[in-house]
Amino acid sequence: MGEVPGHIAWLEDTGERLTTACGREIEIWALSPQEDGAVLSDWARHFRQHYISDEDLPVMVEGTGKDHAEYLRTILFPDKTTAPGPSLRAGDFAEILIADYVEYVLGYWCPRTLRYQDRWNRNDSTKGWDIIGFKFAGENPHHPNDELFIFESKSGMTNSNVNRLQDAVNGSMKDHLREAMTLNALKQRMLVRGEQEQANRVKRFQNEAERPFRRINGAAAIIDDHVFEATDFTATNTTGHPNADQLRLIVIRGPSLMDLVHALYERAADEA
Image (cartoon, rainbow, N blue to C red; front, side):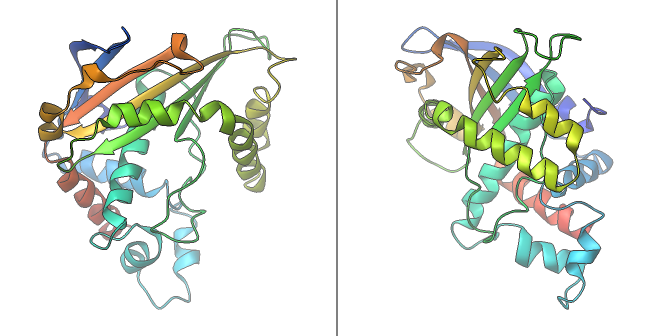
């Protein structure tokens, strides 16, 4: 785990807990951004680097006739106004925030591997599960207590009567079907970028029969305060989840989150 970004201090456990219809605990966290230009700039750079590295950006811009900000706004980043761009922005924000939570709060290795750079269409979602984290129990390279943490996230930043945590749970139920393909894709991206050591760490989790490990699932909803107040999260039902006994549920709420999302994209482009 690298240096903890400053914006993680704005993510706090409220201590509030809800109970689902099936008896599972839901953690309630709050995201409370502050007017701190330095932290926001660092957050925007961290955000941008999920789409393209700072080293690759000048090379990719070259020949397009655009400056860095125009390139990011018109070629890489989801569109600010034309659907489905805004919802994709919200979804990407939710995924990155949960990846930060998994890595910097829970202490997992959470490789990002420029997840969004592979999109042929900037307004098309990335396939596979949302977030994956790894934790190694000790010196033994194949310790049975090594952990694979698979997290599904959903965003809810506009008025809706949909329980986004339930949507995340429903999506999480499919993660076991996508696991082999996603680990393979992750390892392939690492090998293409010459990251052999990281690829070997992923390889450890590709054959559970011969190299047992612990599997944990998570489902998260990242939602605006007004959506939180209008949603009955206690109605969430995890019945039928293939890993229900190792399923973590979390809701992150915050004020004016869509404004924050757009502001981060703007800063990420302007400061590139």
